[in-house]
Every structure is written in structure tokens, then in C-alpha cells.
Image (tube, rainbow, N blue to C red; front, side):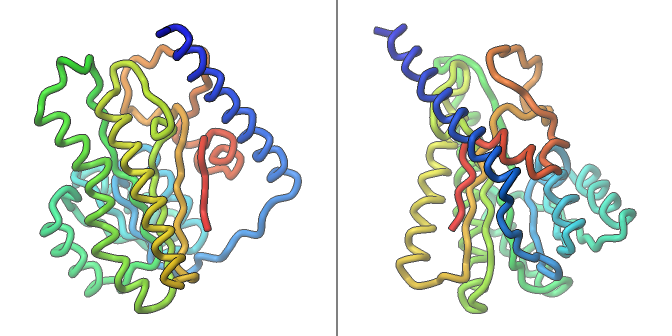
Length: 261
């Protein structure tokens, strides 16, 4: 029975892969119109390295004013310096996004220094990994605090102003793990399932309330080399470096789910 379940999971995964590759090919030849984000104030969490850093650099190239958040002050400052060196505008802040009080305090500084955030990127994430029975309670709680609960606190902090202004965009970087399980990743997969459920629900509520000018996108990358996973050895699926996210094709081909309204 276990073998059948594994085979079925692989079949579903490969069907999703083929579907998204087809979408990627279609989009390559018939690219969608890209909306302008020039002048938008974009806040990216976990901007000190990996996907967060690459997204921040790319958003700056597209004309956005970047507000970069990370718990690692030095790495975060380097991201801001890179943006400025390339001619962009960036403001760096240290913030623990698992603490709603800390978020409110730093958000207040952002509003004073820069203005209201119009593009929110919930990117920060962690991965503990390990056998289910060996995961400690602090590890499990921390995984959910960073990967899931922080999305609650960040959206609650910045969504009200978007609703008031009747404009805004929220991008939640989740993971293909939101659609499947993986050995040694029970807490991570569970947290990503929850994050995707939150995304879908909030998007439906916004649509139901008539907030058509506030858009939401879920980006679920596949295996991306960001340093989050050490000694990556899985050979049946492709792995891309974080820098690939700078290209449109990199995001489309290697995203298992890239849904927006």
C-alpha cells in the first residue's frame, strides 16, 4: 500500500510539472502584459539571502522602492547596498516577523521613513528537517511561526492600508511542499500546506468583499538552491539557483503554483 501511495504521489507531481511546463512555454511565446510597479513601495521579508534577495533586486530593477526586512542585520544591509549600487532605492530594517509587536513597531518606522507599503512580499522561511519522531516542540513551533503565522501578522499589519487606499498586491512565497509530503520534512510541509490555505482564504475574502484592486499571488517554487537545504541529493527533479528567479522563465518553469487574481 505504501508503494502505491508513493507512486500516486509521483504521478500527481509529474502531471503538475508537465502542466506548468506547458504554461511556461505558452507564456514564453504569448507573454502576459506585465503591470508597472514603478514607484510602488515593496516590502520583502527574508531579504538577506536567497529568493528574498533576488526578488528584492528584481523589484528594484522594475522601479519599486524597496523596504528589506531580515533578522540578520549584516546580510540585509548588503542587499540594500546592492540595490543602491545599482541605482535603486532601498531601506533596511531588522525585524523578527514571528513577533506581531515587533512587526508593528518596525512598520511604524517604515511609514515614517518611506510611506505605506503597496507591495508586500512574505518570503521569509525556515526548514529544520529530520525524522518526525525526532522533531522537538520548539523546532515545530518555530517552523510554523516563521512559515505560516508570520503571514497572518504581516497581512494584518499592512492589508488595512491597502484596503483604505483601494490598491495593493501581496505575494506569498510558499513552496511546492504545500501540495505534497516529503520524508524528513513533516513540519515544513505542514507549515506550507497551512500557508497556502491561508492565501486561498484571504484572497477569496478580498474578492467577496469587492476589493478588486488588491491582488494576491502565491509563488510555490520547486527545488531552489538558497542554502536552506544542505547536501541536496535528490536527482529525479531539477534544482535551480536562486538567481534563476531573476528571469521570468525561471519563475514560470520552476513554480509548481503561481496563482494570482
